[in-house]
Image (tube, rainbow, N blue to C red; front, side, top):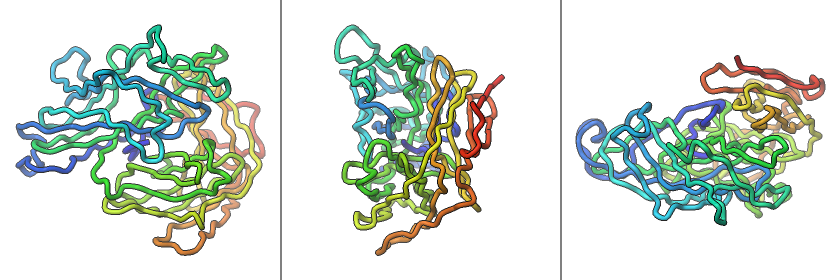
Length: 399
């Protein structure tokens, strides 16, 4: 996931805020670092991924990345700058977790503020491997990924990217594969509904949160994220040893959230991120292992099917965190997620901790959640639920 200082979704995410900052380098001139003046700067791009649920591979093939200063510029307008990949680059997004970046290239372009990005993907042809595809864990069979908008003008992103004269502006495209792949009923087909953010890479010395979960939950069903205001900023899955690396994360203070199947949600508050050093929250000796919990399956339907659904939980006295994402079927609008019944646990970050953290149970909010449906251009809709007394089905409908 990346700046996801707060994430944005093409086609409707719960929050949308993309922050662009100037990369380090020389030259520029002027009080604004040469951003509004004349001259040429350099934009360098890479791509990374958040965890993907239920897939062994999520492949996309990138032909080029285009940027424009105008947010509403049309595909045929002048003023576009491009990073062209020749040959196009096929990337399995699931290899880009735990801080791994895939370089896409760089280009010189006029200094200024860029407010639109287009990610242009290749078409799926008759050859193999497919340009854009998924391999569902349940079948193990490579299946085409339908990406109609990306095959013409490209996946459109609103961004805020500052490129100064004589400087290098380094950005990462964070592609959330889990939230971007949408199943289409029982057709065996999958659509791409991208959830993407763009993050500035200001330093390789820090902007990381590093830690460990117990090897008992070191698997693809465990997600570790840093969040602000109930929105994940960056998320990943632990490696086989339980180690997780959240990178890049903009400097600031965050909640660290551990969500694992069959376990209570664990929240650590006050986790600082700085540009000059890593933030290490624990060691292998004190790996996180939330207590077991029974679970309840929550189902419902949302109209139209382009809406998204996520699950929030408010801890006593705050904060509110996102505990789950409920994929919406592209044909039927049906969604489903599994939530722990037992109370979440919380603790506060301690720098250079030399003992295990003590997590306190927040019994007052056990089983209490808020489902939030979102659709681009409309206010979000929220419904409170108690896993101990669920309605038969939860319905959301946008006019």
